[in-house]
Image (cartoon, one colour):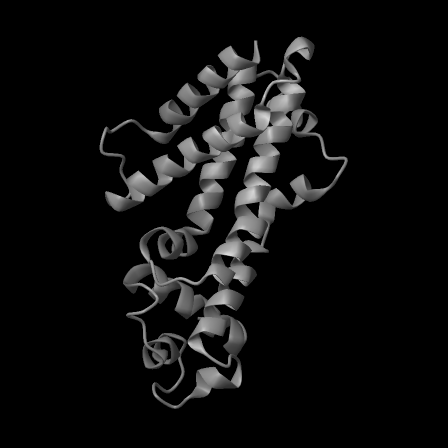
Length: 206
């Protein structure tokens, strides 16, 4: 395990919180997993409490934007970006790509998603960080893409609600697959699932 001690504590804590739940994970376990002396109180040199560690760990992971960083620019065009990645593809191909990137992001944030969706001991401050730094970013990217792709006479439809539905569908696939050990119980693979969502969206767009 590399990086600063603080980073190692964050990495270890997120993994343990995701695997065991927040309440069941002890400070001693976090310290040991981070390569520190368990029970030494070394974690408290970086975080005042386990609750503060959770908030900072979630914020740290979610602000590591990767591919999502570009979406935050006010003049960013989802449509132009999709054309640059999939110039010869159909609208279904382009949307499938967008949804695939969203699904990959959910896997990048696997431990955080497990904490939020399975642990009812999480405070509202953590939920707010997730809502602001992750969920709304994903929804806004899909929303912008839908508005840009829609036929002009359909631009005034409720695309915000449609974007929320799409994000929910993508998130549901990740959650169910993760619950069943990484495989969807229907055995429908991710590409088929995401393409089906894209096909339904294109029907709405036109």
